[in-house]
Length: 307
Image (cartoon, rainbow, N blue to C red; front, side, top):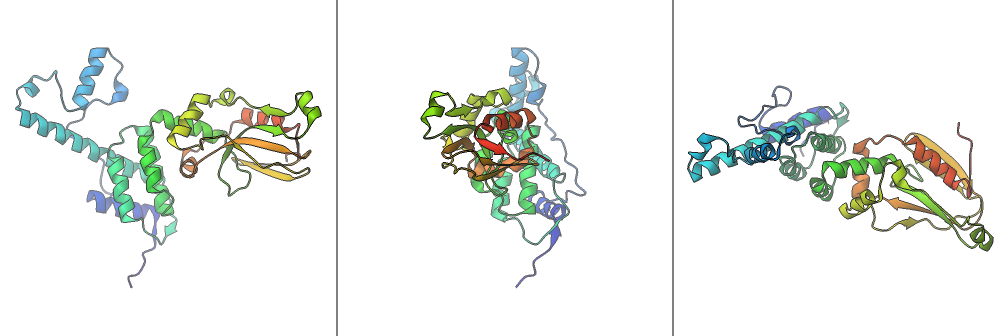
């Protein structure tokens, strides 16, 4: 039986890089490709300027006179070379970025080689720096705790744009847990069951407009389409009178008890894939939302004084 190696996260990352890239990240520098097209972020010119930039990025520099003199086979070879160099550069950048997120914590379990190969195949086509950082955090998290990110999550992340990631980060800023180990929820309302008087008094339900706190309804629908939120709004079971409740909102703990029987809380629930990605986004707490949440529920929940 082979002896299991105990290595730190950074040591494991360098080991993985050596297997995939043929070099140790501790000594290797990420090189810019010999044929470097202008990045998309730098395009602020006219339509023609952007067209030429995109053409060059695709390996078809129409404005280059020397390019027109090449044969079709030479042009094809040049384009494929540029693509391979760009993919190599993307892969090296992401692995180098992952060093910033790897801890020195010792781990005894290695990353599944098939998982890492699949990861590399996807990462080589990620060129936006913000998304490269997200992919780097995934690799660091997988090294720290192998099995944290499924292949299904990697596939979905490949389909996400930067705007999608921003929407998920906004959703993260409004999410809390009913218990520390539960998946995160986004609470937005309540319904009071079985009270004719409260229905006549207009107190039978309450709802927050999440767009006031940065998360618009189109963004919610997009997160649902991506498979990061469940397709339907979720309702809790009916709360009993004086039932004890607690919420974990980022680093804050809120406790209370229901005032009466029949209260139902309404929320959006993250899918398993959404829950896997949330810890990577480090969304900051939104004090305005948290205050509005407590004000909304104060009619049906007795909150304990906060320390």
